[in-house]
Length: 185
Ligand code: NI
Image (cartoon, rainbow, N blue to C red; front, top):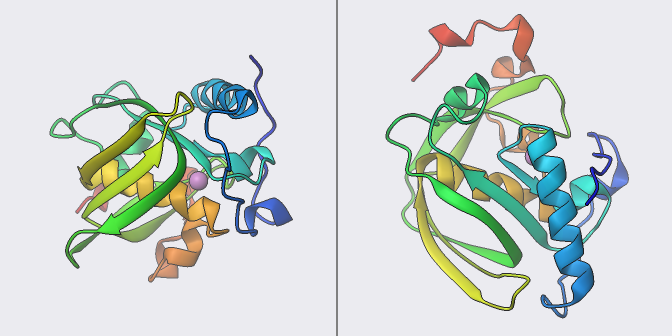
């Protein structure tokens, strides 16, 4: 396995629409996913999309561990004791269905914007579908932090970074400079 280089905001690969994977069971996809998982864990990320490692394919990996198993910064994104853990998941060609118009605001960061965070509205309740590299279908409903992570990662496949989803740009900045503990909602 390998730790891959992560593209940062401004790189063209992050702006492009990623290609649909014709064969989710192709060995190269399993290999890509394994490298992505390694890279995500190394960077303490909750998720990673293939374009972030210069692979413009529709593949995402993510995990929702119990609160406390990820750095404190995930509390700002709504990860708390009530968050139900979700095992490490690889989705090939994921699709999201919005369940209800309700949205919630929380701070997000991104491995492609190191050090930066901003408050992003996301749909609270979604259903998503995708295929695993083993060829199995996954269909799940997700809420809260879990739904947020999936929406963030799938946005990467359409060339969208979290600042493009922000409404209040005054909440965008370097995490180290902010006093987020006073801004919990
Ligand atoms: Ni990201």
